[in-house]
Image 1: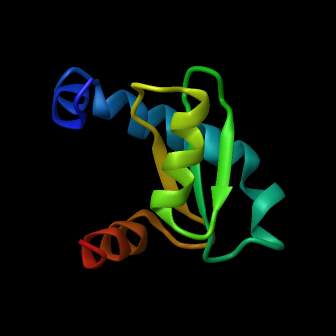
Image 2: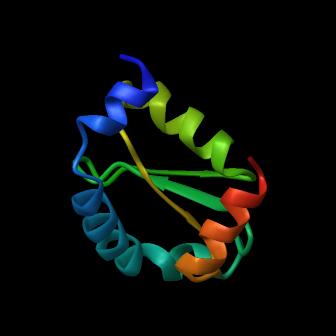
Length: 90
């Protein structure tokens, strides 16, 4: 499935809400040693994929869960800082 079609057919609000809840439950596990890294979370399985960049985290997540959209967060940063980082990389 093409990325554009995948995003169009996905409830992004649900991913954002549930992803944030899952992250709140696991962030202490990552914040001590992984500040600045990226975590991709599959909201259905709650599987988490840690990497140096958001793209790498999504590649790892897609290997296990093809054709899904993931909640991605920059560890130790709030959502606005994460979005600013992702937008600046485009």
